[in-house]
Length: 340
Ligand code: NAD
Ligand code: ZN
Ligand code: ZN
Image (tube, rainbow, N blue to C red; front, side, top):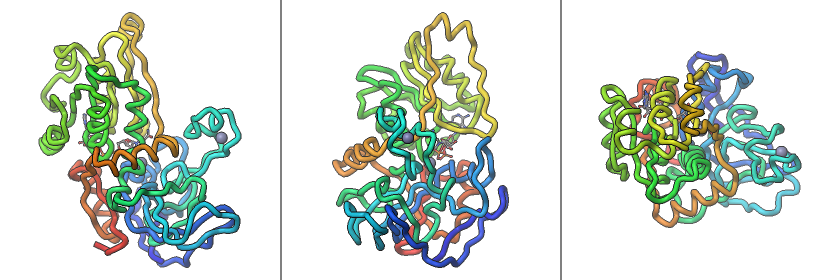
């Protein structure tokens, strides 16, 4: 089977032919149909973060495909069933975080495409308990971006506690942001979308954003304040200054939800304003299996739109360059079913 492999940080990925992986107890083997390119995969391939994966590894945590082999003891999935394999490859199921509905904080977790091989491959393994069934009516190409971009922003909106009539700023209208705009609208919020390209701002408007802010020329904080200040700002742009800009546009009691993970990201938060205004800074990491089930349910009900461009897996290096140049419309999805 074909796989795109990171052999060394910052080097182009190498397309390799590998033997089909064998599922161990509690695992399944999946024939991958579609696999999304999340900006996290770019960070992984470049070794951007303090905790690094170990090359060689196969990135990808938006892999969707059909179960083709069951490991010992797997009884709740069947051959041919379509599943998605998210970043949360597995968690321990026993710790305080797992038991309190915060499996995403489990210290024993293994992350797909980071701590184990991921979805940039024709076949992959998954822990059966964390392979999420995809409802009929959701295509593999749509399910892929929902598996990380969707669940992450859906959860970030939950963490923000977004409610009807509130103003929610979404900073960065990429893979994550184009879905964040839609979840904020579903929550009933008024949405201010922030980006640095005309195409992204137009996309945000098409997806329901009520106002757009061009961070190249507008003072993001001042514009948000003119609209009363944001109850919540979802920071998805891979740029430290973008976090500071939306933070300065919070209203009193507002929440900055940090989601993007720029290399060496460090943000200055003014103590005086934070204290006097009673604002919060919260980190939000992906979402649970239940969050992902809800994301698929919303999509199956026709409430969200996934904007993607499909590519062959062989284009992985050019595709990563496009993400870094900000040229992708929203999400690139490697189409392994048709190879296009
Ligand atoms: P992306 O490249 O698709 O989108 C980033 C967007 O930010 C682009 O539209 C870009 O034009 C815009 N942007 C760049 N500079 C900006 C600025 N100064 N102000 C406003 N917008 C700006 O990336 P993505 O796949 O959506 O991922 C975004 C980030 O989120 C990455 O760092 C990724 O690693 C991280 N991430 C975090 C989690 C989590 O659980 N916390 C999950 C998935 C991804
Ligand atoms: Zn991701
Ligand atoms: Zn745990």
